[in-house]
Length: 166
Image (cartoon, rainbow, N blue to C red; front, side, top):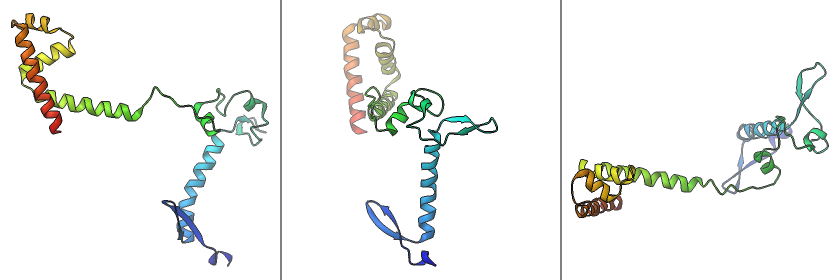
């Protein structure tokens, strides 16, 4: 049989590796299936001979419906389709990495705040979460503004120490 002498290769980490036909077919089958699924997804649905909807088999570059700016779902072109066609639009509002870093920093800060004494937590909550000024907090707690300032300095030191440790 002709396939016995045929060699099969897969590219792994930039290097071609010879594999058996079984391994090659097992690897390539889902890759090809996904490629076909993506190609079908962009095909327009038209009425077939029996009146049911079927995928159009004509070239989309010549189809008046597709050329009018619609995709297979009947909507205007999506960003995904534009990207597939080579148009790259960068969304600068969404920075996933920075959002992740911000969330991690928040988690660390909340963990550090949880380590404070109940009185210190109350003071942090009043000033940073309730939006009180140090003067308003001093009136609410019945202590001097300088006592609030000194307490906040101790809180900052405790938070800094905890965050540096972690």
